[in-house]
Image (tube, rainbow, N blue to C red; front, side, top):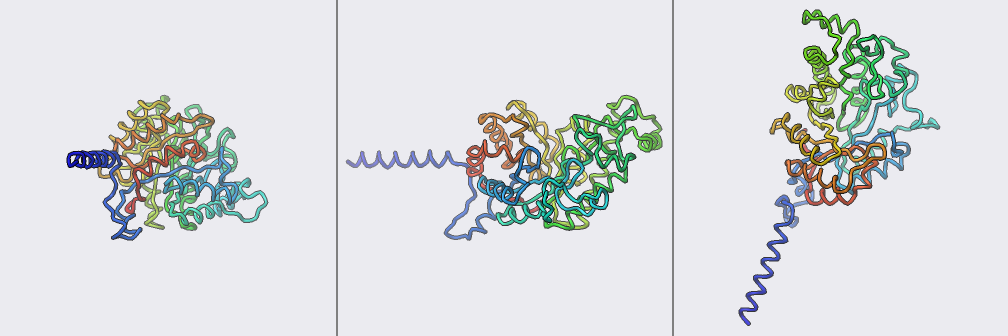
Length: 397
């Protein structure tokens, strides 16, 4: 009888030990001794976000749509929303800068009855009630339009157009570009960013693979070519991928990244400056984004490279390669961009599980999903991962 009792005790102990060992490591928090806020304060820190756009999504078109989006993010454990505020030559908030420049203060489709609606403020209100951070995402950056020959921006300011080696408007992957190396164009872009920082209780601002950026086919504007010759003694080569020519133009954008960072901090020091460039070195070769230099010079608080891959092995390798450019001391301000929807294409459930697992294996507890409309398809995968590893938003970004 005594032997049987000992066997049951041993069985119970082994079962409990196996169960406990299978659980994710959680912070050592005692709910009996600490308040909820104290317990949250001891959680590890990570950015878990999603991009919210007005393309292929109707979430931003009504207050109800915004509230549903925020509710889903809160349910899944997403703590950051990167909301589009600039694309196709329009702001997605009422902008005095754009009212004065084009006569149109905001994308008309967002307020068709002209009731004075402000989608950005609606999102901030709804998200902050759920303790979710909001970043103003300047999606189009220095791209003037998509398939519209520069739209109102180039029509009103033809000298702002970026020129290729043949003197034509730079177009790449369907996007037509402003000259991101022109001080006047840069000042215009900065004025939009600063307008949002001044007028909204925003948590952060973000540029992506179009801010700061310029296709390497661009930069053949007379003033740029003259500056290159003056500074280097060289003539701008006809080969747009010429290494010194690439680096010189990339350095100009690196300087702008620093200027933009300082401009934001001068207005509100606590606003987070985030960039989401393409992966390096492709980003430099194709879009003049030498973002390791941005990291080195301290011009970015939160870096979210677009680790967009369709095969798991490729994702793992690209993530490893990307992390090599981020010092360990700055990993708190790093989260990979994860592609979950493009057009009608979405990764399999297995691929999604694999990408999140790869992030965790790399010591990363967060990521940012592109984009919101793909979340529903992976509700269980995301929620399971996030419940397994609870986090709080980094407090020192």
